Image (cartoon, rainbow, N blue to C red; front, side, top):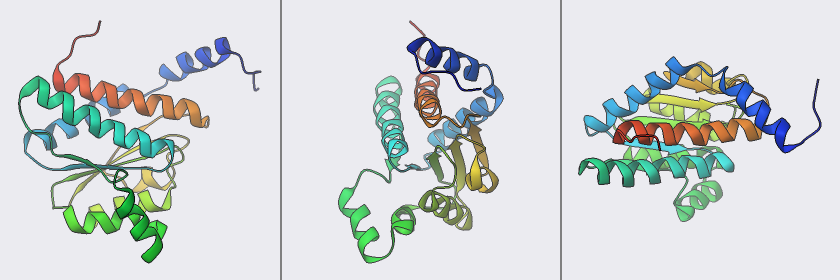
Length: 189
């Protein structure tokens, strides 16, 4: 049954969804990101639309805040941030290859590729995860809905079990903040 939109209903749906999230999957994802960071591997993110903004936000927070907190380098890169590169691959090759094209130039075995998608079926993100696995990189899918194809192909995943795109996107962004606070050992205020 669908409820009429009200602020109270949205917040209630958020609270209900929060109780359904697999906290152990989040902890595993944090451990994976921490391991890659501490070993000096690159951490690359990608997504489309709101998920592209979230993928970029992850790298902004993690790179800046981890360095400020620890003084150590965080080798992060969002594949969503170079508009010239994205449009060159989209125009000259295919939109489905905008992330794989970039990965071919920078990805090494042992690096981590994080794909963000509400549905888990964004072809260019799926392609990025498949390519990453082929070259021996680790993969992490941050997904909603039923996880889609990304859930099946990623080595690791965090699933937000909702078919409401905005709720999925809310929690995907929250995941980034949780990772940042964990890596920085930041207290809650």
